Length: 341
Image (cartoon, rainbow, N blue to C red; front, side, top):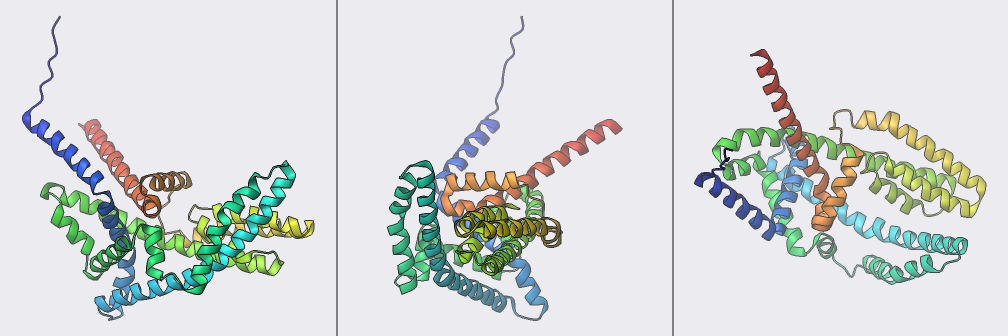
């Protein structure tokens, strides 16, 4: 019997060692890698808008500065107006629902859970309404620290203000033999991510406004909180109106059966309008990201890096999908060439 012998060259061994060292370095500097990825994401999302402003003869640095200032002002406005009011409505809603569920099932557990988180919600809402917490501190606490936030904003600003800033950065760090392939994949992913992100933001805004106006017109309580829920959960296609609709029907049922039926009819109509009009109209040029991929990516991102990981989850999934598509296309080309020969 012949014995098979496995030979490993020193070149292959050193490549394995180098890859292991690179992985260890990425894990050790995970926060730095997350900051860099967030900066690349923000820059890639804002770059088309900056280029459009350049076509209107607005200098790139002024356009970039204006976009960042407007974005920060909008975030501050949301943080100090919509968020505290939504927290108050959220607390009241789930306090009522917790009591109702406890009565139905004969348990005090739901009420105990609500009572345990109520002090924190009250403290956060009061600090926002009183202006005791600065905007930078709040965002820093959400993302993992003030330094984390400031460095991310500064990096994303410099990458955006430099024409093709991310492309130049990748050229500087990539080996020459990988440069063309990785850059081509990056530009394709950048277009897809930008279109997906812009489309999702428009959909989230439209659904939040639609839910707020509809619930307010019907006279259902907690209109602002339900609108926020619909807008946030719209990041997962079709989920926003379903989730908000279920809550709205539960709230309306506490007021009257007829109002609950009206709420159910409204959200069914809204869901159909979203599925057959808004999504095809807004997302017609966007990449098709499957809801299962979105949910899975967000869960993985939360486990790996918390809230920053959730922000990066879908863009990373889109890049992964692009890599898989490229690999499948390459295999199909090789198979076609083999058949022709």
